[in-house]
Length: 283
Ligand code: SAM
Image (cartoon, rainbow, N blue to C red):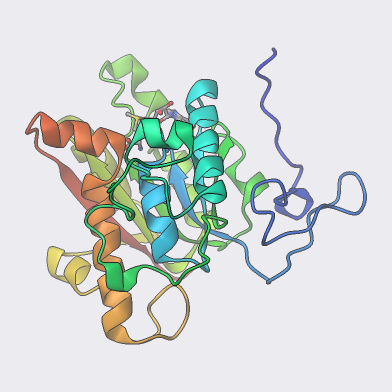
């Protein structure tokens, strides 16, 4: 088909330079991977990212962490890609919340210059340019280990996934025992898996499959609240407990309120149920 999806034969042969040109140089020979300039790899994966609200709002918070949205719909992926391009060209002047700004590449007078709900103290210094966020058109239910090495990811997000209500469609759900084995493979021990949905039945489905999978342990609300508090828990390595805790709290805020679907549920005053799981060490 014209919308043929391409997969690298292994993570080492993936060309990331088109996604993150400030972090990778183009491959030197066909079929080879892109040399990494700063030794960084993608660490956050936003599965079924839709319009990209999560990754785009987290990018400035973790300027040294590479994050990638995975989206199967062609036009939606293109939209996110255009939005990131506009933000890269004009980082200070585009309000990522405002579609018109993004299209024009400029914000109107007085527009908010940072993602809402994120403290200015957490925003990076001048010169930040959204180089650490990208989007990839892919079927995340297939070939994830072709893109990511074992233990490469520190966070994987499943935010408001498609519910597939009918029983005969349940196999199309993005969380299943087989797929959990893949997610556990690409997520490092200690890494975190996030789910959120406004569909109670899907919440039960996801949490019961995760609970019966031996490599994931659910965090209590208190543990979620204290995430990042231990020094060194921050994704960027050792940093002050307070800062990494602040960031982890901003991540939860983004999970609940920064995606387009999350905002829609909020507008309709719908309920949301979330869960956070820690990837346990291999036995
Ligand atoms: N996470 C976003 C949010 O919270 O706004 C989007 C939620 S939307 C209800 C679900 C998204 O998952 C859709 O954009 C859909 O195209 C995408 N999707 C569904 N199956 C997928 C798959 N196998 N691989 C990648 N994306 C998928």
